[in-house]
Image (cartoon, rainbow, N blue to C red; front, side, top):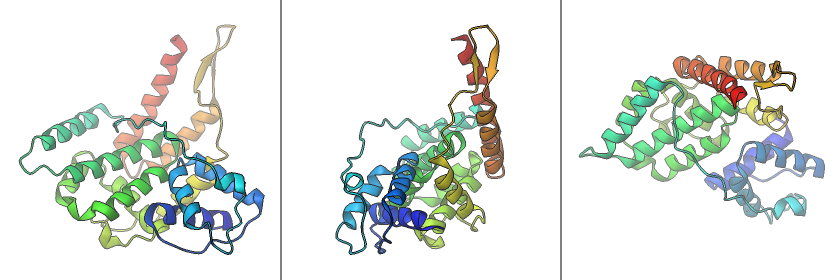
Length: 263
């Protein structure tokens, strides 16, 4: 892990989890590279809070224009959904049933929604840190109120136990969580650290046009082979953890791109 990535995670741990570790001084170029990573992962709020926490550090030499940014509060958070229609139907039934249950556990339902949202983000964009931070922060603040037995049952019904375990392993890998804080992690996923670091180092420069197919003025259809290959590689990385949802997600995106040609 290079100095940019080390400082990146120090800022996030400080801003999201109030964990302090001294920053390492960097050149302005490296700070701007870190800023690209922050925006690519949509973790501006946690990073800026981390900068504020470290503003009086002796070794903190971040450029003033980066330190004085303001977070964008305009983003609209969509209701998390699954690509597979059968699993998404199960998700809706779980949500409805739990809301009307005698022993309703809203916190377990909220954790489930965060995990599902992370699955969508990982499969569609390759970024996951914003949601992973949200999951970690929620568990640190309200984990004692979560019914993990219910959560485990729901994850089993949605075939997302390993995806949840992967997310928990990521919290352990880069945010210093202990396994006993994450009851849904039965064993640590070995690839967690590699997947997080790959997402961080690739997403800032991974800016190819987001189109699969487009119709040219001549009437012929052109495909974006680079994007298709990237989406296929991303799907292959996660297919072990959620086979049905990963395959459904890939083909749904493929079909949606074909439909856009008609519009």
